[in-house]
Image 1 (cartoon, one colour):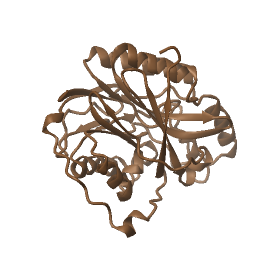
Image 2 (cartoon, rainbow, N blue to C red):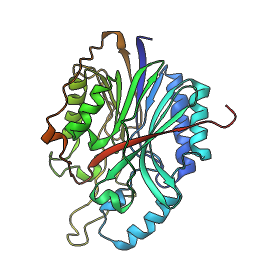
Image 3 (cartoon, rainbow, N blue to C red):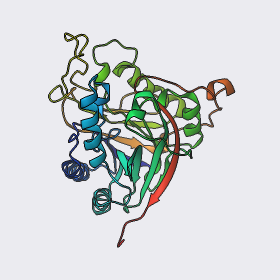
Image 4 (cartoon, rainbow, N blue to C red):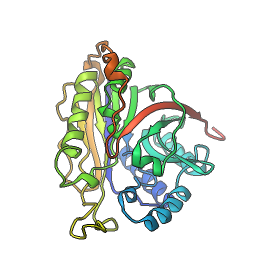
Length: 316
């Protein structure tokens, strides 16, 4: 199939409420089907929401939210992911969604690709950096998450993985046709300058599209001030978290936008029609050895190796 309609989610997660988040996810899958989408992309750790409370200076907040976060994380073989997989199979929509995956008392930053037949492939981040390791565990290394589907070759990375030249080169070598750049939102940086904010991350998505000659679907979570507006205990006049979170975007292989973005803070789906027959996917030269060996460390950075895991549907 050379023409594919894709949709990027721009929505606020149901923070620390897994059951409500699964219902919300299924509603978006059904909405995407009504809108004619064949591929739907959700933000990073959309279930149960990215743990922005990591940035708070209060130990009490951290202990409280860590327990709640673990309780609301998904398991690979649990009923929540199965329900989403059934929705994908019922609607015929391929789904990419970022999840917090629980395994015993550990929780991993994971990406799940769900085919229209309900087959689930999960990849865990190998080396969460700095602050992320206060919540997430590391996993063993593996290959990047790329799948052949009836709608082309689809790959997915989370957030600042896109700032790593070595990982980008590995993904480009996989000759993706559709790439999901899943962003958790940019609220923690909002208004703090452009060093790590929406401008840089949007530029990273554009560069990925151009370097890989691939379509890029970049969903972003809405992160409003309500419920997250806290101040720095050392500097009460300074808000640690700000509202908004950026906007979802869809780019063509040349880096041009294919759809007018939704307004910041607006919830909904951003659609675009892709012509995979026009994609040019050259072999990309690997990054220089010195650059490949460097780990990028940023405040919410990702240093990744991935280990795909297949999950079957009971009764399928």
